[in-house]
Image 1 (cartoon, rainbow, N blue to C red):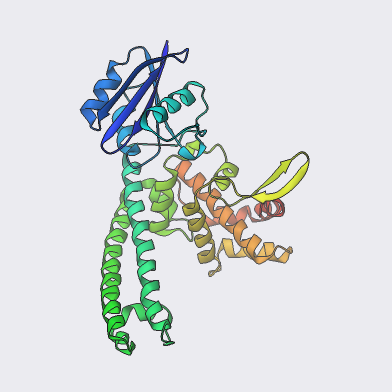
Image 2 (image 1 turned 90 degrees about the vertical axis):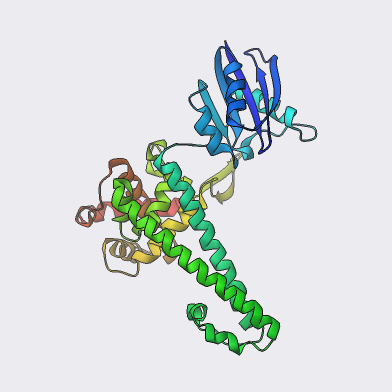
Length: 349
């Protein structure tokens, strides 16, 4: 008989509720959050065990310590957990999770342990650093714009002498502190880039991704960290949807309500759209592919998104096979891919 365990985890306490196959509660316990206490309770539950908890700050750690202790482990997306009635509390939340697991109503979030899990942590910190850098740069430049002082693009972030142009003493002080922070972030970014270059040298999958035009070692590490396992995408169309590079027609009662993106990963969309922008500045296969689409009447935005989808499809195949990009092979398929992608561009852009 299968027992269904709902876990409501917090940094200080964890609440467990266990239901049997008939939905009857057979155990409830609130314990201090810690590996020995959690494992002791899970091991005390007999029979076949399925356990669920929501994706959150503790999910990586919980997944690592529990994946071998139960017959089935589900890390669910809280967005897709059916809302329950009543106020939020630990016990009813854990009970609700156990009930949803028993009914098989939960949508799992993909998790994987090992190198790529560690890579994901490094990439997440790098993306946070990039966002913080942009935030500080915007605040720094705003001090000049507030007094209608001309700024010269990105060069203003490396020229400390420009701070003297700020008239207000308090604003000059703020500018000095912001400039120091930006310089610190710049040095930290170099450390991340060095680490990404090491990953490219030691990991064949990242090296294969980095060989694709427009990707490079940074985007290769981001793709590998987000995708983790390419086998979870049955085909390139599912991968495009996950990258929010395609839209689906919303229909109800025979009426179309427009095209909308599925719930996907915006980081991957930014990566592949950024890669498309990079390759369009060159004269390789992807630029020729873009020009061929434009000649057939496809507008710039749709053609650029087709290039991004092409890069995404190649990236997925590269991760599956571990092979590096070959432009000669792509050139041989140019006539076929232009026609097939043109068909998708009408529907999916």
